[in-house]
Length: 224
Image (tube, rainbow, N blue to C red):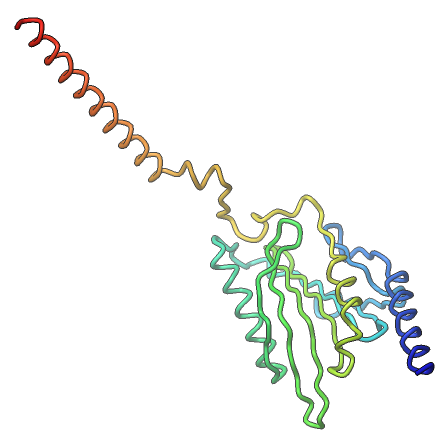
């Protein structure tokens, strides 16, 4: 029992040390994330890759400029298609299974989060947690790799890593797709304006008719 408590204490100490040792690293002038201080960077095929061993897993950040000839996305559904194609492409290349796919937000940007489960065929299973952020100029991919048997130990580490992603206020939703609608613009669009005008006209006509009818009745009463 004493040995178990000692081992558990060591695990807690390691986790605590890990979260204390992470430091914020600039991926570029707009995006930063906390990484272990031993991270390395590699520039290849127009990509910049940051990677590091964590206490219970392995972290990777990929910054990939999009093609300069890429047509800007127009609507949110176009962004959703980019996310869908990305997840399907990862699944196809790895031979794994995408799990827990969901929309998320980082700052004002919409992102895609999902897990990739890969069976190595030798009885071992590996997981990769993904968070994808797409802008017209750059695609950012954040990954955390870990073995299934370490899943329970990675929770704090994963939370520290993904929650540390910081964006410049310059990045807004219209950096992802062009047609964004605020509460004001969605309410005061052309069809709704026409509906309001039409409703207003009907109300004015109804009130006018009621006033005229009342006046006529009053005049008849006076005549009598």
